Image (cartoon, rainbow, N blue to C red; front, top):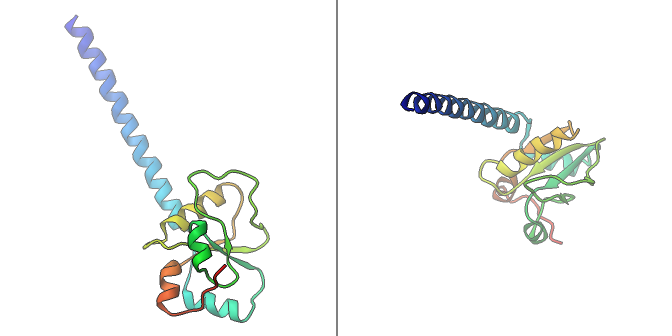
Length: 143
């Protein structure tokens, strides 16, 4: 009986070890994927907006209420969600420049990874997000 318990304990320990390793690998891949997106500096984006550079769309990943209170001129609202549900209203033929009000672009980086998984490949993240934008006293639109 004791031999059977040891065998089951060993099997359980091995399974837990494998599960822990798999979890670490998945976490590392998610972290890598969210940091793989190119960054755009606030001054670069401001110049793009002012010169009416074609082919890009600014996307706010903040909650709708935050977007309504103030957003980057021309930005559309596409709030961060845990799981994307279709249909997605963002164009595939433009570079999407995502931003949020997070300290390290966590929501916009996460949303970029989710969008990339469903076929959006032209994605950039605003370095510093709306916090940097407002710190530089760049213009804000209100809804």
